[in-house]
Length: 182
Image 1 (cartoon, rainbow, N blue to C red):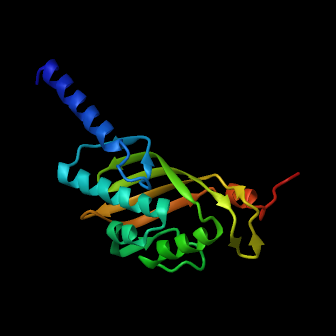
Image 2 (cartoon, helix red, strand yellow; image 1 turned 90 degrees about the horizontal axis):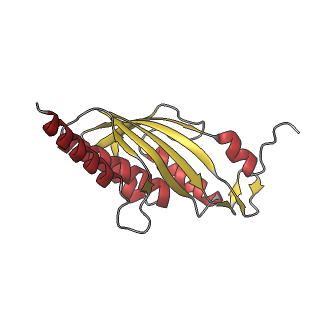
């Protein structure tokens, strides 16, 4: 393959990657700041993967459970299931309802999405104000910025598995629930 053809393909791939990372047109759609396709995958798989990712994080951004149903498979498994959260498709819905009762204006910005075949790594920033109740603690309107990272597996255009880690210490400190050191 000639150097010119290689260069043209790289430019086309970069343009495609930039166009896919552009925010959707709806006001509540999650913003994706950086999208990386780490390994070449068929166009249909890439498009279905990005659609599932966008729907899942649009769900976290808005709380709209119709988006969750669009994003996850009926056999969805949370591999880092917190105590008290149901397993399966009901788990994220349960978590969102509970957290939105404490932080009704919760928003997520997706900082980076890395697609590597069936696996996608997503790094996010959450923001909002703690105005509701979380357990025994009543919010006072304080901002609660925190980060999270997910590893999701996507098959047939739906998320089947999720491994996640949240910066819960920062979250609980911002909410006034946890205190560390002096």
